Image (cartoon, rainbow over all chains, first blue to last red; front, side):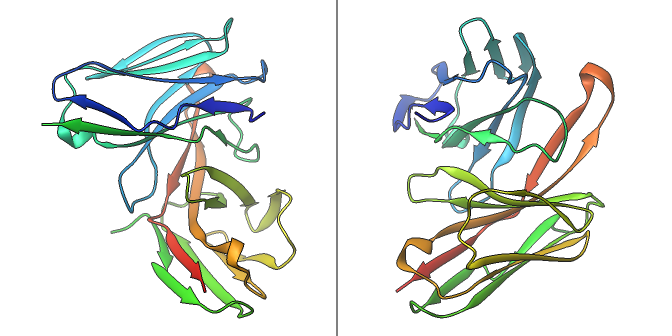
Length: 113
Length: 118
């Protein structure tokens, strides 16, 4: 069983819809949770960075962490065709660079105009 | 001005060959990484260096040898390439920013090197 599980999709939704992307993890020591967005043939780029449980909002994006159920979510409001990409969740125990990031497998999202 | 740059972007080679991928970052970060992304988009850490010192070495075959001549560069040399080495290899760098609960350690990725072993 992978430490971080993510539904690979693909997921297709119409433009303007609310998108919900989810991951579950098994290690209760994880404290830092990230969402990366990866466009085709590009490297991942950080979208959201959260610490512990709670919500964090940035424009149309909301990251949610529920440590009690080991569940992390990314919501995209008013989805746009430019949101079409692969979304990777990632987590780690500490903020130190010498600790590896553990990634989910990524969900491929397509927003249909 | 690209923050993390990798060369080459594409690499097509025969089984058994030896090849190198280079990575440079101009962000002034202390830590650099190599990741392998398979065809299913799963991104897995291979190595991490902090100020030229090896920090993370995830059970990678010893045909893969990273080298960090200085903290801005991390190269990856692969000996005796095998079909299963075909993947996209990403370099990344990071530095801790902020303090306390607002501290972040964000990894910045290069555009990747697409390796095809025939």
